Length: 213
Image 1 (cartoon, rainbow, N blue to C red):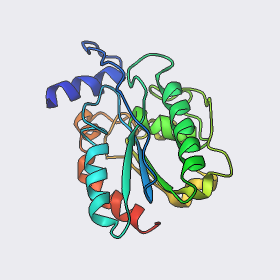
Image 2: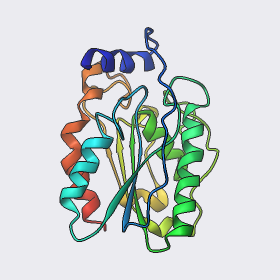
Image 3: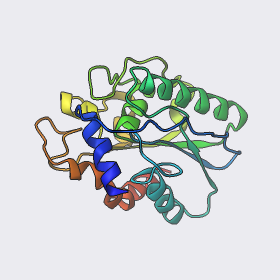
Image 4: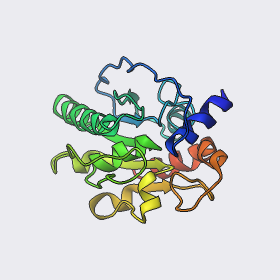
């Protein structure tokens, strides 16, 4: 498993040898108090994402008590195709808009790892164009939905290698982890293993989000 994930990270930097996974089947969340919308990294296995999504959701369930939680796995290829991140961007906005209309009291926690961070960046109006597996913005969360987003949790965010970060409306609600030496989010980084270690930040991310519910 670890070798496969290393190859996936290397492929983002121009390596080869990755087998494309099929697009996952997803379903809309019910009217819970909080919907955790998770965009996995490139070729990342797991329900919401083996490295980030799954451990973060588990940590959120422990940190946020007295409220109901649901999860949504962003429906996008998470591969190296030119439109992958754009498809995820569109799906995040569509899902959140639909949920907000169906469940007016529901709030959202957005989670993005690696290419999934590009997806979330775009969805909150921060373009990932020019970043590794990034894309131009194709949809943004409307102003009416913005107050419902409690927290944005980003890991190995490729726009950081461009010197960019989340600014503006969502800045105070965003935590953005970039491990030292991670070549995906650190310009000049050379430690591919660093890009695979964000499970260790799940608890800190959940604590941050719980403080904003």
